Amino acid sequence: MSLTREAVLAALKAVTDPLSGQDMVAAGLVRALTIEGGTVRFVIEIDPRTAPQMQAVQAEAEDRLRDLPGVEKVSIVLTAHSDKAPPDLKPRPKAAPQGPEPIPGVKHLIAVASGKGGVGKSTVAANLATALAAEGRKVGLLDADVYGPSQPRMLGVSGRPASPDGKTILPLRNHGVTLMSLGLLTNEDEAVVWRGPMLMGALQQMLFQVQWGALDVLIVDLPPGTGDVQMTLAQKARVDGAVIVSTPQDIALIDARKGIDMFRKLNVPILGLIENMSVHVCSTCGAREHIFGDGGVKAEAAKMGVPLLAEIPLHLSIRTAGDGGAPVVVSAADSPQAQAFRDLARTLISAGQA
Ligand SMILES: Nc1ncnc2c1ncn2[C@@H]1O[C@H](COP(=O)(O)OP(=O)(O)OP(=O)(O)O)[C@@H](O)[C@H]1O
Image 1 (tube, rainbow, N blue to C red):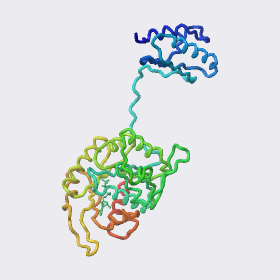
Image 2 (cartoon, rainbow, N blue to C red; image 1 turned 90 degrees about the vertical axis):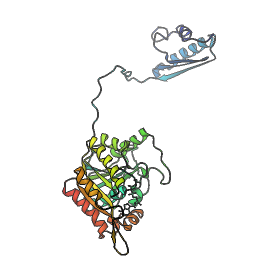
Image 3 (tube, rainbow, N blue to C red; image 1 turned 90 degrees about the horizontal axis):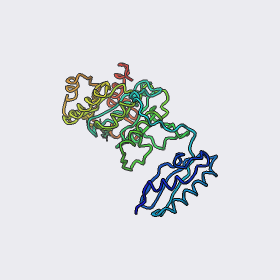
Image 4 (spheres, rainbow, N blue to C red; image 1 turned 30 degrees about the horizontal axis):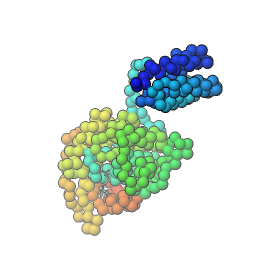
C-alpha cells in the first residue's frame, strides 16, 4: 500500500507542540510537506530561542513517521523563522507601471542606434563622445552593444571597473570620456551568450549602478537592430533622443526606417540621421567616390521629416584610429574627418540636445 498524506498527517497529529499544547499539525508547525514514494520531507519553522523544545518535537515526529508502514526515509528540517510578518498573499491593486526614470546627474541621454550591423554605429558613438568632450562637455559613454562591445578597444580602455562597496561600479575614463562597457566585465575573446533577463539586469545595472557623476551627456551605444536592449533602455531610462546611423545603401536605409519606427513607438524623439561612409576619400590622392551611393540618407531623412545631422566620410584613418584606441577626433584632430564629428557635436549642442 502506498504511503498517503492522510496517514502521515495522522501520525504527526500524535505529536504535541509543547509551546501551544496543540498537536503539531494544528499548531501549524508542519510546513512544505512532501511525500515521494517512501520519503517524507517537511520543514518546522521555529523561533531560535525554542530550539531545544523543538528538537524534541522533531525527534518524536521522526520516530512516529518511521513506525508508519511504507516510510523509508524521513527528513525534517528545523529552520529559524524571522520576526517579520508573513508575506501578504492577498491580491493587491496593481502598482502604477514604473515609467522611464532620469539617470541621476545626467542632463541628456542620447542613444546611438542603427537598423543593421556594421554601419559604423560604435565608431560614430566613440567619435561623437570625444568630440563633445573636446567642446567642453562632461561626457559618458555606455557601451550597451552587449553582443559585440567594442568601445573599450575604440577608446583604448582596459582593466576591470572597481566596485568598492559591492553595489556601485566605478567607470573607467580616457580621452575625456567616462566609459562603462560589458566588454570590461567579460574577456574580449569570449563569446557572451546572454539570456534575456540577465541582459536586462546588466543593462539596468550599467545605467543606474555606475557612478556616472555629473554629466552633460551620456551617449548609449546600442546593439544593431530593434531588440530587447532598445526596449529596456527606453522603458527604464529617460532617453532624450536617438540618432540613427546608416550608410547610403538601400538595405541599411530600410533597416534604419524600422529603427525610427521603433523609437517613435517608444516615445523617444529622433534627433536625426547620420550618414556614415558617405563618400570614400582616398588616403593617398584625396579622390572622392560615393562607393555606397549618393544622397540616399539625405533624401530619406527629408522623407521621414528628421534632420540629417552629419555626413561622415569613409576614410582609412577613421578605421585605424578606432582600432588603435584613439578615435580620429583625438588622434587626427585637425583632419576633415575629425571636423565632421566636431560639427556633429556642435550641431547637437546648439540644438540644446547635448
Ligand atoms: N567612416 C568610416 N570610415 C572608415 N572605416 C569605418 C568608418 N565607420 C566605421 N568604420 C569601420 O567599419 C567597421 C565597423 O564599424 P563599427 O564597429 O563602428 O560598426 P557598428 O555598426 O558599431 O558594428 P556592430 O554591428 O558590430 O555594432 C570598423 O572596423 C570601423 O573601424
